Length: 290
Image (cartoon, rainbow, N blue to C red):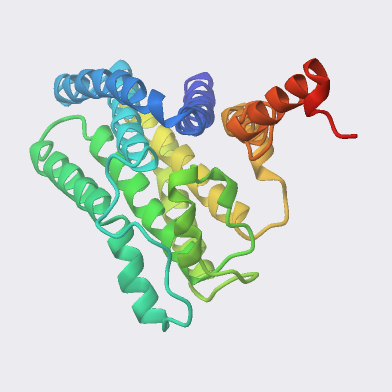
């Protein structure tokens, strides 16, 4: 039981921490993005190496390494998207009055390159890991990929909580492609299918004979349960963003900085000119109003 408990706690932590870290880094000023991506790319290289080496290690440690490396590879893809490095050819809002299918076609254009990168990465790893004794990394990536697509489709069709504040300023135009309604018809199907898969993974973890299989299935099952929880966050009126309030601090700082530098603000050029004029008016009585 301790073995399974540790796997659950570890998955909870890495899910919470990596999500908050991506939110924090993508909320920083754009001039920092190249340094964030440089650090993330270094981790990417190490993660790819870790996936390759762990694919032949059917051990508890191998399961943790493969799982962590897959999460980090996924994190690089998400950072590349939110920093604007890997999005799509369309970078403008959705025209008003579009039909559902037109909006869908245009929405694909906003993230086409990112989706292609995910497809290539996932497909390549599924093929390369075929026949290996440890495929935890491949299955982890597949869960993230599938549940992300489910989330995107549900957001497109319409949900209560769109989390628009999570989008960096340069991607705010994408909210024009989102639907807004309490729930859509796809949502119960998405949650039901994901729940069935989660139950199967839990059953596999409980019935596994060896430590590697138990930990591997437990890591995957916990990740699937968390993905289902994220789906419920889309429709339940709960302040889920409070979980990552620390990751949103960079956005709040940026917003406050923008206010201070706004038109006529203390840090703006207009404000500076006004300040100089006031000082000149006090220094030279001839320029002061009668």
